[in-house]
Picture (spheres, rainbow, N blue to C red):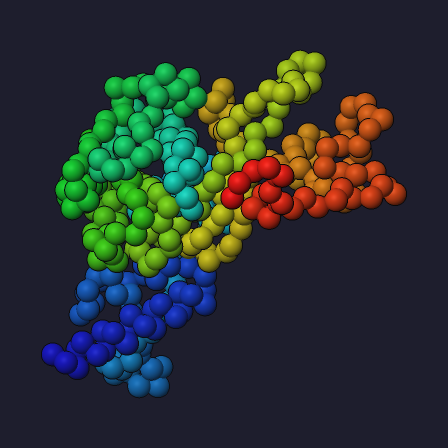
Length: 350
């Protein structure tokens, strides 16, 4: 029994190393039928061309066949889909991280965009959103009017399950992940709870694979940690461009929702950072390129004082300097003494 366990761990270690070198997942390595190990341990017996007797103790790990194109959910952004080796897996656990609590809205908006793509490509089944009371109290619920206007999702298609504890939410997610009557399952958590460890995510990933449905794990203010999810995306809100009109960009307006996406983990192990805009009319993602964004830049932070402005300031130039920025040649004002060091006025008693 001990020898079998050691051999098993050796095969697992070799599989991980070869998958890392080839830039794929170890789960995608092909396993032959009738293996003495578990079905998820890929190996192939070798037979020497000189010796017809097969080598019983020698095994190798080889790369499996590519997954069919319909196994992935394509976002429509070619560069992002290529970096993800075809898109997000449809039958798997996928992670979406927000570095801070304020990014919960951006994470939820991006996942709802993916749900809109799923419903447009298949049967319009309901979607279950699971979370704890703490999560919904902190981030709130999606607005029913916005679901239809921005994503084409009817309010009755999005079901919510509010659990008092994380343990209850995980139980509901495991039971829902195996159901084929749902188009997708969303599990939203906060931070890095100990109960959501590698074993728990393996169970969720296995249930999603068995049902052939996606399971999206949303993490508010969580740090990356080892999980069974093949893909991890780190999301935040990007500055919105001006709204496009027939006469051109409308100054001072807010355009389409935009997301900054960083690949934290993928099947190809290729890092990348992308900015996508969600087109609510066409219900597709459009990548924002650098040249297009440079036509309408939006300053995020004002220029520091007493430093040369890298760009000409818009508007009329005033004849007097700005407040707090003395003109050249003027002496800086005399520093004022702190209040507790001022001399007492004459005639006042101590």
